[in-house]
Length: 113
Length: 113
Image (cartoon, rainbow over all chains, first blue to last red; front, top):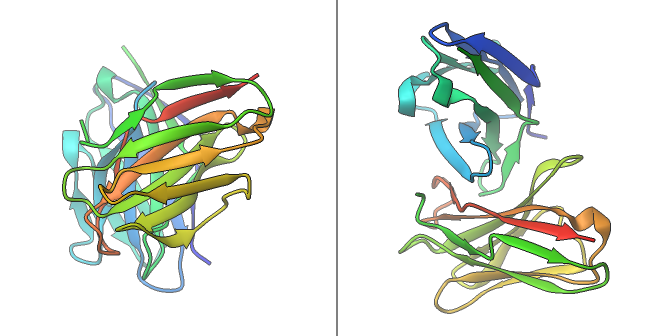
């Protein structure tokens, strides 16, 4: 069965410092992986997606993620946090051959001034 | 703005009642997905429609039903509401292919009292 585990429920960083949000996946085959962001009282916005092309995926707002098959990881990073990055981030896997998305439990990112 | 619209934004109702949530997909998208976000269950896939037909079912209760109309908008019907149905309900749409990216609407927040 496919699943994702977000290793931290909450991450706090200072503005201008790097961001690392960790995600491990479980899949019998090469998965499609996504990161979505949810700002308070807003819908879900796609940050980036991996669909078996380049293993380093660049997304919006300076975020990127690296697919590491050997570690079954898809961690999200950003070199320098901005106050507007404070939000909930979801690592998501899509079932092969289907549209159903499976969401991780989410990581809340706080950014301190 | 993802291009997916949902109405209403907020809904307050009583136990035992029935409500209808509406979703209009992005222009040209044939697939519509419904998800439920609650504090205890996180984000869960409910059901998917493609061009008017049910394509996949997730953790959708029998008290819940959905349909997609010829103009491709979709409705999620929730009946015999219970306190535990209080949640944020998201609709997402995609072009139609199984590998397509899903774009999410802003959600409908349902509160059952």
